[in-house]
Image (tube, rainbow, N blue to C red; front, top):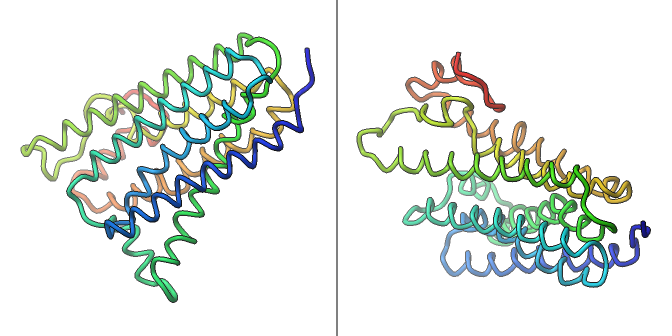
Length: 265
């Protein structure tokens, strides 16, 4: 088996950073025009798609062609679906309360503060979290059973996230459910099927690097960071703080798993 192409991968890190930064800067300009910084959430998924496509182009002639195409398609599917879902969910709404709160205490120019603390930070996270996507493109040799298992885990996560989001959207669209807690479908098994789905997606993509020790070494930080973000960072923890005071939520918490799907108690 050929050695991991460190020189080509190092150059790719720069191309990936440029792709993530480019998406965030374009989104920042659009946000200034619209007066809404919430659209950066749409750019999150698009940033990963851009990194995957740019990395696939940059890695031409290296790595395994089948793995390169697979990881690019999987990442683009995940990122594009997420971006479309968030765009639809936010249509017709004003600024996100999270960004209103952040920018209320901004020192100096609010927009420049948003550029630093929201757009550039998310761009850096896209670059960091996408390391398995980048590294997998350069893994030499054909895919093994580990890569197949990673693809299966990605499929599980993608379906879990997509179905969970669709179920919640239908629930919210029914006026009879206003003020109620969603506890049906996948939401009976976990309070966060969308975040659990993301968790599976990124560990699945990481497994696509596991046919190379070098690729594992440079990318294992990614699923670990994503797991922390989903469980302890801006995902589960913040959402549950926001939901805590709603009628019926404490009962829902008592009978429903916090993250990993389990039968209702």
